[in-house]
Image (tube, rainbow, N blue to C red):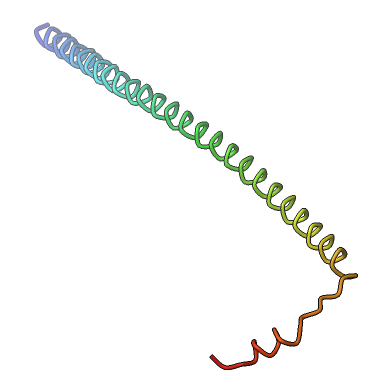
Length: 112
């Protein structure tokens, strides 16, 4: 009979150790879960900050593209206007003759 009591005691101790082990494991897992939850929270904040920065950079890039497109159009328009003015001036002076007096030509040929 004493043997049965020791077996029961051994089983109770073993069961108690298993329960204590499970409780410790649960506490460790809860602590680990809290730590991982905090990391996820921090990562979420960082991701939102990075998203905001990317959105801002995208907006700035779009604004710069619009400015560059406007500049290119203005430059092309100005070039076209200048070309047109040059053609107009060339047409206006094409019918005119310029006579330089001989005395002026001779003075230009003289050495200094």
